[in-house]
Length: 121
Length: 114
Image (tube, rainbow over all chains, first blue to last red; front, side):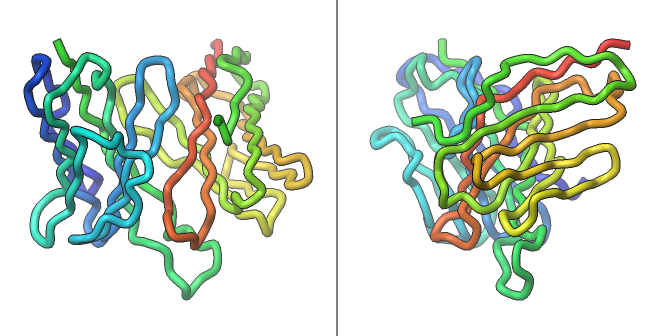
């Protein structure tokens, strides 16, 4: 399966613990995005990364949240000292990135993983 | 500030009829729009997209219409099938900008009745 992989699919943490969510993009994709879906809401952008670079973190909460996409290995979304309000579905998406070769091509579409459902007790 | 709005939380349609899902946006900088379909406990699946240089894009049973002056787009599904029952999200993007982030609407739950 060459799709976006996320693990774990379900994660339960107690308040104050750390949560680590992993995302492996589709083969050939170098751009990774994290989105969060709170109950009864749409998906909200959190952060956009390329290999070893954070491009846009405008949607990340100022404290406790961090993300990385190292040269080797999956992208990691890390939540320190989790609180009940962090309970949500966290989705990772990947894309090959925009290309200047074709205007408005399909290359900028983002393909989503199955999500990690975080429950904070 | 909800820049992408889907004002109908739910829609029920008879099998074989047309489903029309609507989406409005406020940011005139958006120039690329996408529709995603989502089943419970799964990630969103890309359906169809349209750029601002077009007013219509068609793919099989799915057609997206864009009215830039009204800042409105719609997804038409015809004929509707029970397997189309899912939540549909509209998303917008500023293509080629500094960020590729998608701004999502809140979704419309489509129920196709057999």
